[in-house]
Length: 108
Image (cartoon, rainbow, N blue to C red; front, side):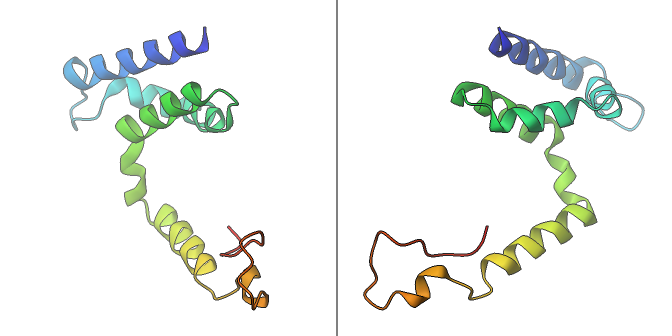
């Protein structure tokens, strides 16, 4: 049932892209979803146990709300995450034998 609802949301947003743009060329339906907090709900579905639900949520976010990555705050958070991942703090560094059963890589 949730998969059908997500498909409906995708169809509504696609219709908005084609037929319901405001004066600035912004999809009116995506704007409504943003102001009503629906993006948070979609982001929460990215942790859903059903992989199909996860994929549909990601698809909708990337397709209709992906421009948020131009936001300076998002860029700063992504840069901080990159810095943390490449800080040289690898758990596997204390593993001289390169045992494949140990975890290596950044904290995130």
